[in-house]
Image (cartoon, rainbow, N blue to C red):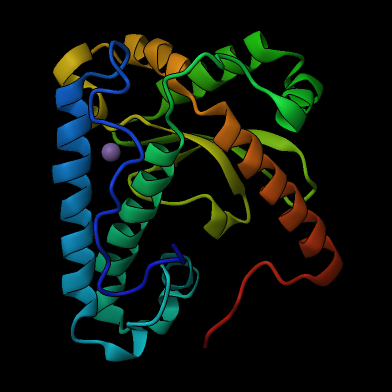
Length: 225
Ligand code: MN3
């Protein structure tokens, strides 16, 4: 499936809502995907509906070029396009299989840039714990091709800051409150068991290629206005 544009629709998950049990519970997965993500999609479509000139734009183009939109629609489009992008990325990054640690080129890079998987885990957990209020913790590739751990607030994205996402962890309370209540640390510990390391390794390779191309051509962003 190619990248979506208006009208955006809910992408079915490639697994059952129960697939992340016992780490992320079925009810949380259902409400998170079917209600929270759907709400971002509905609000984004409503904000774009009166602006046909943007109906062919992808989420990435909208977020990169938010200044092209009418001023009164920018906040609504940016927050909701970010909400759709971040949630699609988060859900695609989950898998409950036997691969419980990094693989491939990403394993090599995590060892190189963090000193090992355990060190990565403790840094990622500390970052996720440090998000005040709602947001995300991310493993990203910077434009030098190195891994970094960063956080974002609300529905901000990393690629608007030239950081290419590899893994994300949604730490909005809606992502864990039904099972873990206020215990974000327990949710983070559980999440480490359902990272889709095959997807993460693919993301890493794409990001590394993008960073290399950017260094050559300075063409990461596609300006539309
Ligand atoms: Mn969420």
